Length: 311
Image 1: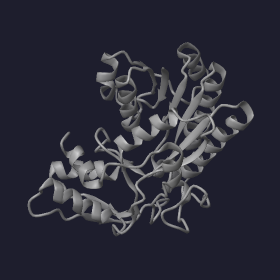
Image 2: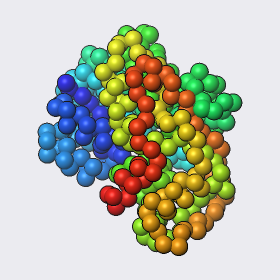
Image 3: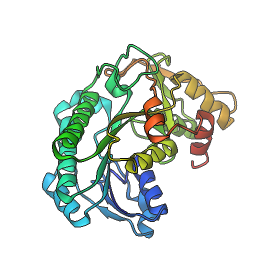
């Protein structure tokens, strides 16, 4: 099968690329390498995947690549993913996450793709949710432009399904973690904790550490993407992808210290809470279980051990 992965040199995207190549698909990667890394694709490129340095905001270039590759399935992960950047520059965030998604959808429609699997967010959409775990039908109340942009992108996915008959599904991730996540970045607190732990520096916790997240291993996210790609055409709309477990940030650090065997423990530094971040996040994954037969398989301790083994 011919597949195209936007943002495929990034953390999650490169794992999807590896899985597709491993099962024998022909894979093209679209990435501007602003945050993605060519090194994430070394093995996939050696096995026949192709990398195209294209910015998802360039609709003409996106359309030209899709016309050349003619993918059957598109995995759309290219995005601006930093909540704080979205607060500082909401228009720039929308250019990447809304207009970029429109460019991908239009290119997919024009080239005759049979399905688009769109990457969205759980906590970023639901904001301060009224119920936990939070189902897909909960009110959408983002606290930052990042979440608002992802919701707009989901809306365009739904529009292309209704208007053009292009099946689309939007996977609303919990907090994804795993190997290849940037230990110097801003989006993955577990990766940052691991990096600080390995360097002997004290990790920083923003707020008091009581804020909770639904932590989901990247291997489970990859499996959700493959199942969504192979689903019946009638499977469309949003799907939560998480564990259904609500774990505080401070407890994640404690678990990491324990599984790493760090002597004497680690005392974090505390900093003021950051604007636009929710206090609690936990996803109801019943719909993904019902329509995809998917549920998370990797627990937090095993997932953390997997990361530490690669560092």
